Structures are given as C-alpha cells and as structure tokens.
Image (cartoon, rainbow, N blue to C red):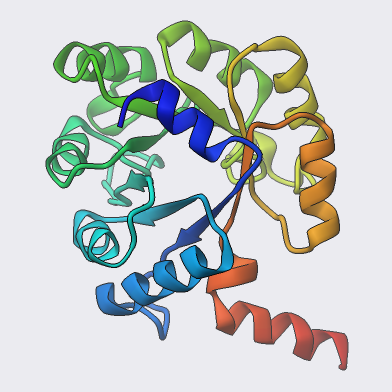
Length: 228
C-alpha cells in the first residue's frame, strides 16, 4: 500500500492493537487473528500487532493495513519495540504496511543510537512506511527530522524520564499536532470514548486503542477495582 493511500484510509479512524504477551491468557496467533476480525467488524481502520507470526495470522483474517512491531528483549538495552534491523527484516518479510519502532532517545542493543539505526533501516528499505513510538516532545521532533512517516505518543510514561506522566498525554498530542506537520497517532491510556474524542478534538490523525478493547483480564480488573 502506498503511503498516501494508507494515510487516507486511517485518517480520523480507530486503530485497534491486537497483542497478547506470553504471560497473558489470550497469547495465541489464532486468537489474535480472531480479535483482529472482531475489531474489523466493529469498524477499525487498521490493526497494530506484535510479531511476524501474529501478523501473518491477522492478515489471513482481515484485509486491513497492519502496523507491525516485534517486541524482543536484549540484555544490553531497555528498547524492546523493534530494537534492531533483524526485527525490521522479519516485519518487512511478512508484508507490514507500517513498521513501528521505539524512537526514544535510549540506546538500542550494541549501544546503537536511534539516528544510526534509522539511517541504516531507511537505506535498506527506502519505500517502507515507519511509525515512531515516542515518549516526549524532543523525540517527536527528531523522528520527523529523521524521516519517520508518522509519530505516536506510544511511549509517554514508559521511559524513565517520562515516568509519572498522566496518560493519555494530551499535552504531547497537542504540541505534536501544532508543531510537527506530520500525521500524529494518539496512543497510550485511552480507555473511554470520551478520552478518544478529546484526542481527536486536538487534531490527531488517528488513534490506537489496545487494552480497553483487546485485554479482557485488564478490563475485568478495572471493573473489580471499582467495586472494592
């Protein structure tokens, strides 16, 4: 899918994140495929998914753009969302429409900077669409300068230097929308329709919701907490 076509398709729409970690009851590519189908039937404009295996299964179930990532933990880095070019290679191979990568200022495995990593990636895959998962304003500015196609607020509150930030991070969304002139993806902490509407009122291009839709254990816990 060409960039202009994809951006038009996801504009003002909801992207549903269909992910489950090994520690979660729904960990299964089959289940993620059906979760994506349910999201599609509910009106999602795209799916965000983790791992080549899950992405292949999701693509069997829905004809929606996939924002793919691969969470891999390396001993020498805190970066785990598509941390090296090895993960990028695997995501390209399964045909991800967009590849999401950690675009924080933290060092990647082998002490590689984001700049070093992305120069290498863009040289190898000049036509691939990339999404920057950022945690603060300076990271979004750099992501645009490096040539990312869209910037998300995904990592706000998840880095050491943004810990304690209230999410959804409307302040970061607004600054990005006002300053970057690039599609901004609201992601992180959106649990209610009212929060989603507030994000779109700020002018974001589209928004990602994961836990509030696709993680029943966490959804159940929220309701249980309300009656304690």
